[in-house]
Image 1 (cartoon, rainbow, N blue to C red):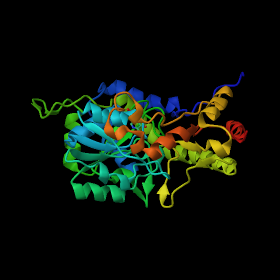
Image 2: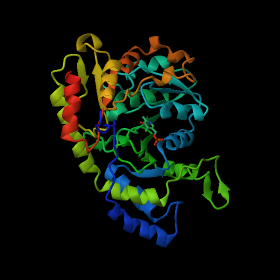
Image 3: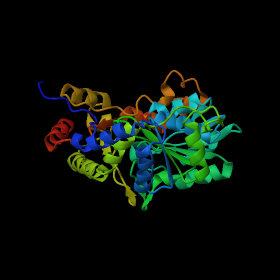
Image 4: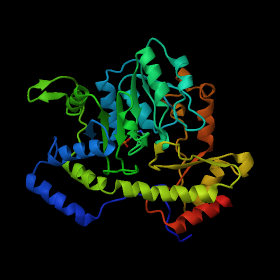
Length: 369
Ligand SMILES: *Cc1c(COP(=O)(O)O)cnc(C)c1O
């Protein structure tokens, strides 16, 4: 085939020369981690960019999820979505809680609030929805349920960096939100993550817990973890913040191209911008109706692969289908009809800032058949 593979994503990096002065400063300071100068600057700059009160940086999103659950004292059962990356479910499991899977909405693929109440038991303590692909959840309804039943609301916000609804960052919703800065995300620090809260005491508690529980030199308030982000990645993140709006604008162009070129393909459905939402174009999922399109999702996936185009079947299989979770009563496909169907039909096309128009055209023409 000869051509270079087109991956589903490709990270944007700053100019290396622009990073050197930051490195020089770190070498001079010899302060490598534990809330150094760049760490403090990055937390402030992020809170400002996102439009939130407090940010606590983490070494990755998974540990942020685990520490967030601990900070909120979550126990028992947590109602969550099966249509997500495994980290969401694993974090619940690692905190000795039981995930309870709720079906998703057919339009946005986020947790269906109308199906939540039927899953609540005396053991339920929290809801953990995911703004999947950058689509904001129905926060109004979810918050109302949380308030009515006295539950915590902890958002897996790994996909919504920079996403706003009616001008407000969706990271302001609920008790806590978790962000991921993994290499594959819209905003990356190689690995990295954060918890976002508007509660000053919660921010303090999180900062103890991500540093082994140390409140000061001799006081350990809880069995915390080690979730700290270092100075290297904090400095890199500061630099990345300068170009993230350009990154999102470039992704928007890619989305516009796909939407235009695929709009008349029978059997292919796409997600569109939601009025009032500032999207970040983190992913470009399409759904394939095999009867209408004339090919199954897996057939199209393989056809693209044969042409050196690496699409991904996010999120297939559902988390509820993995061996650890499939025995749970809520994991039965009959409980999750929409998620089960979407997982069979979904395909994420290559989406990144530097995808060339040539490559876009190639992908478009293969899907057109
Ligand atoms: C990427 C991701 C995570 C985990 O983030 P890491 O930083 O890779 O640990 C959690 N949830 C979702 C939905 C994700 O996509």
